[in-house]
Image (cartoon, rainbow, N blue to C red; front, side, top):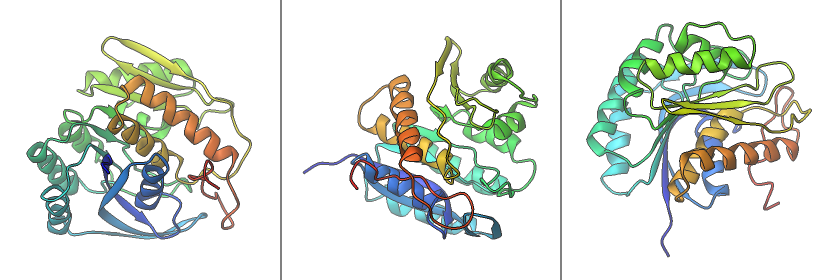
Length: 262
């Protein structure tokens, strides 16, 4: 039996709702095999981030080598790349191994609002990751950081996305979930823009939604869908995972990655 295989390069969430743990769950829910490279060990839960311990760059590099020398990877998802040095190393390895698809979720801040990366890494993303990634998936705060534009509405989202494209990104999906009353996401490239809507679900269980969305996009690309359809399928998946979520912890609980199964 053959199976598509995805790799996540991201941080670890010990509470299981975001990061590597969310990525692997999303891969499995889509019927693809998941491998992982851990960039940072984050002591966090549904309410707060307690500590961030970044994995030595040499160990990140060895993890990537270990996966690619043995497993044929169909798509890569990039999550928490907490330092400019790690970003540069990951980019170097991706240029070496040349995976077919790369989806980058430029994780900088946790759902709780706590910082997960060193300041100023936007320049490293622009220099090293933008030329490689097939799509960048920032939320509103991340899009503001990457574009230098304050975002207050959907029009601002579009302006920010175009700015990120002008800085070298191929495709940008700006996620509008941080805007009041909006669940509109906008996919932009040099040829046009596409708007994705989904109903807003009144639920506090949104821990790991960005990780889950980007992983679902990567899984759908690995399964043979084009980017626009992969985004649509992934957005619908996340909306239903929120709608069918359960309560874990005292803060923002996780989405239900396996709502179709149980």
